[in-house]
Length: 305
Image (cartoon, rainbow, N blue to C red; front, side, top):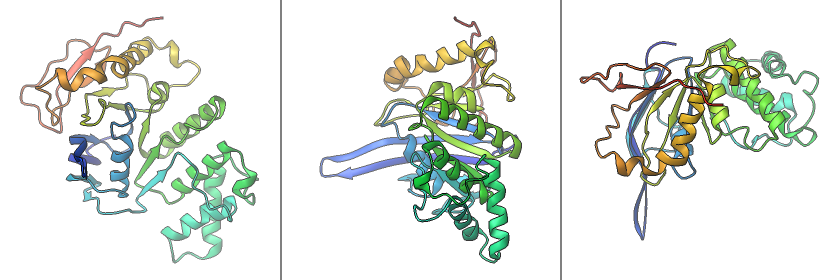
């Protein structure tokens, strides 16, 4: 991971009505490196889905700009694939047909055999070999989401955007799909941006966690660097000495600090949001930090049982 691959620069979202103007969030700045997995976490109404929709080109900011790989976003693009909360599959098409449709949309000059072979490779990647000719009505919820993941990855996007794609699934299926997405992103170097309410999901998947305060008028409170190793496994995650310190820090934000943050920090600089390093005390705060290099704070790494 290196460089600034995604740059959200001072975006805001406002809605006007007869009762006045509502600001969902404003002056939001954040960035991601290529190959990074980031999660935005916060309560309903803070604008998480709106940020994702702006990144996808499905919505426009009221002000500010979003730049991906050196290009300002203007509308939708096959360079950015979205996995929604619902599977959003075409019900009259098979598994192979749904994935092939995405592939043929990206590479219009490919013949049918090449399209199907490419689609099949991603169906195999998500573990649906043998289900190619089933329609969505014949699939479980988890299998439908696997098709959505295969469809998104099949167009080899520069960035994968995920809008709580596992929230409607049972715990076992959710865990399995989290494992699959994590494995695929690590193997392919996929850049991923996800929104979630699930603290454990964010800790397991993300390299960076972006906590947002309550809306309306939400702000990005801090950037939490995940101190756990990138090759972490689910079964031994809770045994890491920094796991509970990280989890407690995020839960404390969601339960307490998210409600009081904006009112209690009038000097909050949205272009210089603090980076929290769990378990690395004593880091200096740069007085001349630029937006690309936010100031750094630390959180003690004392684990709690």
